[in-house]
Length: 125
Image (tube, helix red, strand yellow):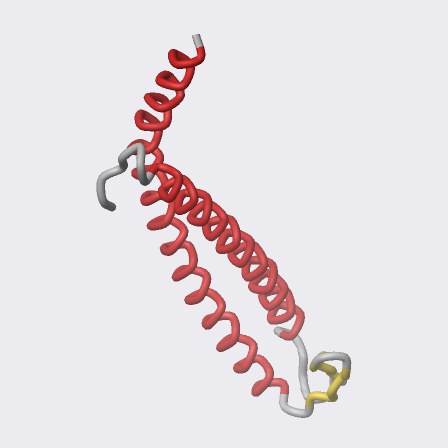
């Protein structure tokens, strides 16, 4: 990141706020994926004892579909879970990198903002 000056401080503050919002949005996505992974794990655990004799349905949107091949369903769910875990790991890395950038920007912004505030306070006295 380039130098922060009194002239570009507002731009950098806006960037800082955008980065914080992006970090929060990514964190929410991580939470949603965590819930989905947990649900998939519970489903896979429930299916462990399932046989062809059991009648199993899978929700597809607002429709329930009867599943004839339990092994295939288990494989699909395992693959979906693996994909979600990879996506989750990627998002966590993005959040970590973004938070590091946010901290660096905050360290650069703080003294400039304080200097501007002190100048403004001295001007009003």
